[in-house]
Amino acid sequence: MNTFVTVILVAGGTRMWMSSSTSKQFLQLKVTPVAVHCLEALSNIPWVREVIIACYTIYCDLFPKRKNLIFAHNEECRQGYVWNTLEHVSASADLICIHDAARPLLTEEDTLSVIKKANTYGAATLAVQVKNTIKAVNTEGIVQETLDRTTLWEVQTPQVVVVLKHQTHNIRRLGCYPSTIRK
Image 1: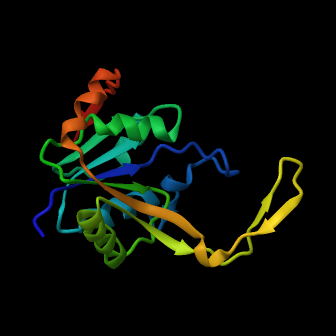
Image 2 (image 1 turned 120 degrees about the vertical axis):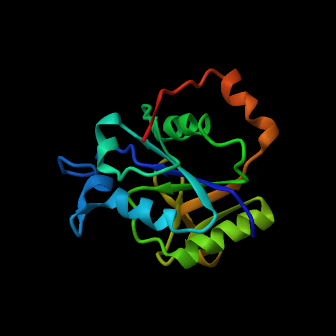
């Protein structure tokens, strides 16, 4: 497979759900920030030709300097900063692989599988079948039914999509112009 993959590493969380002074993607795991473990794992995938990291500028220096590493400044919400990174995707990219930088336990086997499936089907994501019992409730919180968990999957990252090259002009038309720092 001769495919150009751009990784978007989403590292802009603000620890809203944690009682820590450090966002979980920048906590130390074996003396290295979790997000750097993700960068290393994804950079070892043979088809990855560039990595765009969405994070606040104060965190840029935590990442090792390397060729084809681009930083896109963060926005207020996850969709905003993923959107900002699209401005920087190479015109040569065939696939975009989005991964949450707070999830360091991805395997090369899983990542390769998702990339290959996206290349074949146009999009793919890592997912695990739901194990817990899931209930559907009404607006008052009263249980209406128990959902069949054999049909439910918990979506994870990476999530990979084919680049629609003819649509890239829409990014500029909609006015997304993030500033970048190249290392």
